[in-house]
Image 1 (tube, rainbow, N blue to C red):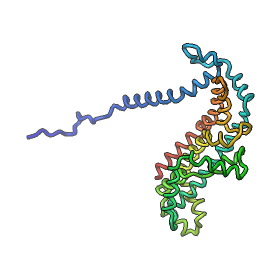
Image 2: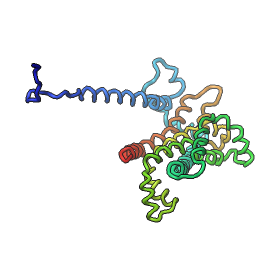
Image 3: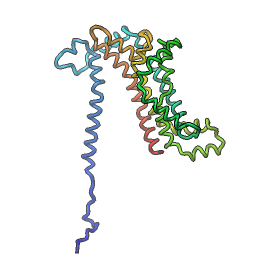
Image 4: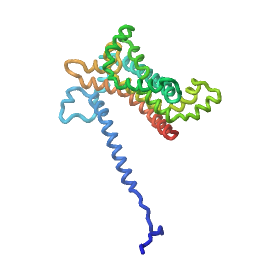
Amino acid sequence: MTAQVTGGAHARPCRPSGGVGRTLTYLTLTGVAFFSALPLYYSVVVASRDNSALASVPPPLVPGGNLVANISRVFDTVPFALALLNSVLVAGLIATSVMFFSTLAGFAFAKLRFRGSRALLVLTITTMMVPTQLGIIPLYLIMVKLEWTGTLYALIVPALTNAFGVFFMTQYLSRALPGELLEAGRVDGCTTWGLFWHVALPAARPAAAVLGMLTFMSAWNDYFWPLVVLTPENPTVQVALSTLAAGYVSDYALSLAGTTLGTLPLVIVFALLGKQVIGGIMQGAVKG
């Protein structure tokens, strides 16, 4: 006879070593946060010193006392206040437009049935495979024809929507928006526009927040197209930073002082909206 194992008082359930796993998780996250923040911290260190201090061995690891002077030199060298304003306008308008139009197109592709919808969606996704650099010359010729070179219109209008946003919102709404909810809205007499505005748009809010954050970052960090179409007198942050870095001898303290100023708005946006974006993602996951 085989011995029978009973679940008596002496039986102890197998428990994972939660304390060790939690400690490893916190150590890993601390290491990732440290190495992620290190470049930003060292940019502040360099921005607060001069070029002669950078040649010292070992390199300086503590901020110096020239930060205010270097920031003042940034504003004296390039129109950096105008560059910050231009970048805020361009990135904000592009992010808002991409969120709205991508949600509108995603709702149409995901929940409306019309002839050629699948072929049109495939064509839209296919445009993502075309390198951006291939369209620079035709786009620049169009901007010249419209007399938009040197203006912010050349940055905003071509980026009012993009294929990635349409694909992203189509995939999200196809799962997060039940068809029964739309049918109930139609029974109540809601039009297609009313369904989008009152049903689809609130349901898409978590994904739209993520898309808006990604689009804002992409527009803020865009360098090549603004460098081609704008002038140094009406720059964005990235064009102004390229002007700071130009010269026979690079002034790294000046360049990184400008870089620090250009990074601060993104840090502030993440600090203010990061929790809301993550909360929206989690809310959308629970609802989905």
